[in-house]
Image (cartoon, rainbow, N blue to C red; front, side):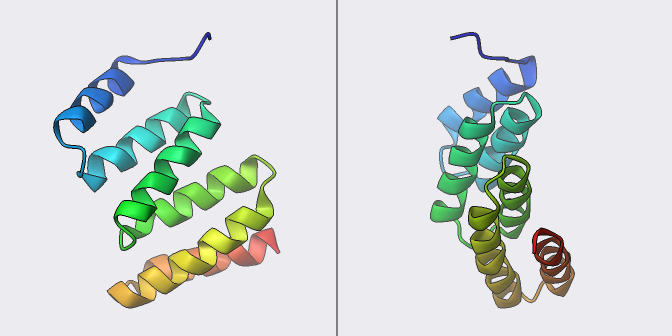
Length: 107
């Protein structure tokens, strides 16, 4: 398999091995995977993050955008709905509004 890598990806993977429950590190890993075009791995990483930390609001929007770009609009819509609910639980009206806007764009 010829997978793209980067020094940042390697560092994030190392950090995650030492701190497997660190949501910020897992989010960074998902973002780096997405940046490298490793879409399925990024989506799986976001899914793991949301399952482990359902209140980590930024993961919902980034995962939904990734899914939408991959033609998986239905999954993106469902994730945005969950993300809006998570943002509301946390009192993050700005994130909720951004996700509402993305949801409207997707249709």
